[in-house]
Amino acid sequence: MSASETTLLPSPRKRRRRQLHPAWIVAAVAFLALVGAAGFRAAPGVLMVPLQDEFGWSTTVLSGAVSINLVLFGLTAPFAAALMERFGIRAVTSVALVLIGAGSALTVLVNQSWQILLTWGLLIGLGTGSMALVFAATIANTWFTKSRGLVIGILTAGSAAGQLVFLPFIAMLAQDPGWRQASLLIAAGALAVVPLVLKFLKNSPADAGVLPYGAEAVPSAETGTASAAAAEPAPSTAPSGNAAVRALQVLKRASKVRTFWALVAGFAICGATTNGLIGTHFIPSAHDHGMAETTAAGLLAVVGVFDIVGTIASGWLTDRFNPRILLAVYYQFRGIGLLVLPLLLSATVQPSMIVFVVIYGLDWVATVPPTAAICRQVFGADGSVVFGWVFAAHQLGAAAAALGAGAIRDATGQYTYAWFGAAAMCTIAAVISATIRKDAGAREPVLVAASPADR
Image (cartoon, rainbow, N blue to C red; front, top):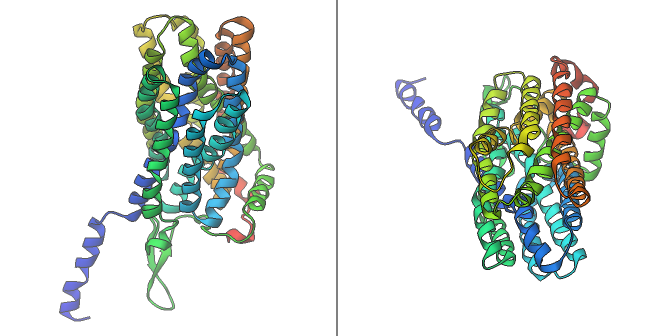
C-alpha cells in the first residue's frame, strides 16, 4: 500500500462514523407513524359520554365497540408481523394508517349502534393492529443489532406521545364544537404521516445499502471484501410463502414452550389494566365522581407524558438487567396503584391523584421492552412474530376488561370492583413473570428452531 493510500483510507471511515446511520431515520419515521396511529387510543374514553348523550347508547354497547377494536388490534398483530416480513414494512404501515384514517372519518356518519361497531371496531381495529407494538419490535429487530431495548422503548413511547398530542384536543373538540370534529382530527393525524412513511421508511438495511445499526463488517476469507456479521441472526425480511401460514406455524412452535405461555398470561393482564381499564374507563369513572371530562382527559395526557419517560427508561434498563425481574416489578407496582385508585377519585384533582398519574404513567407500557427482549432471546428469528402473538393476548385481555368493566358499571353504578379485580390480576402477573426461567433464552430456542424460510 502506498503512502497516499495510507493517508486517504481513514478519512472516509471517519466520515462514515460521523454520519447518521439510516436506522435512526427509519426509527424517527416509525415514531411519527406510531404517533399518528395512536390518536384513536385516546378517543373512546373521551367520546363515550358525548355519544351516550346524543344517541342514548349504553356503556356496554360502546364498550363492546372498543372490545371489538381491541380484539382485532391484537389478533391482527402476528399476521401483520408476518406480512411486514413478506411484503415490506412500508406497504403494511401505509395501509394500516389509511384504515385508521378511514375508520375515524366514517365515524362522523354513524347513527346506529352497529355502525360504531364497524368503524371503531373493524376498520380501526385492523389498522391499529397492523402497527402497534409489533411494528416497534419489527423495526428494532430488522434495523438494529445494538440498543434494541432502547429503540423498542422509544418507539413504544410513540403511542404515548400520540395520546399526549391528541387527547387534550380531542377532549376540547368533543365538548365544543362536538365529537365529530374530534373524530376528523384523529383521521387527519393518521393520514398526515402516510407521505413520510412512503418516502423514508425503508424495508430493510439492505434497501439502504448498509448493515443494521451495531452490526460489524468482517472481511471475507475468500474475497477479502467486507460482509455483515451480526451478533445474532436477524429475521428474514422477505420470507417466501403465505404470511398467514408463517404466523400460524410460528404459533405452533412457540406454543410448545412454557415461557411463551408465561408471557401470554402476563401480557393479557397488562392489556386488561392499561388499554382495557384505564384507557377506556378512567374518564367515565372520573366523570361519575363529578370530575370534568376535560380535567380527566388532562390527567390521562399526563399519564402519556410519563409513559414516554418510563418506556424509554425501561428500554435502557432492559439492555442491562434481567427482563423477567423488570416485568415482575412493573406489574406489582401497577397493582398497588389500581388498588388505591378508588380512594383517589373525586370531583377535584388532589395531590394523591397526581402521584398516582405519575407512577401509573411511568409503568404504563414499561412492560413492552422486557417482553420483546424475552421473545427475541427465546425465539430468535421468530421473535417478532411471537411477540405479535403475545401482543394478541395483550389486546384480548384489554377487550375482556373493557367489556367487563362496562358491564360492572351498568350493573353496580360504579367501577370499584373492576379496579380491585385488576389489582389482584397484576399480582398474579408479577408472580408469573418472576417464575420465568433465568436461562430460558439459553435453552428454549432449541425447541423452536426457525423454519427453512428463516434460514
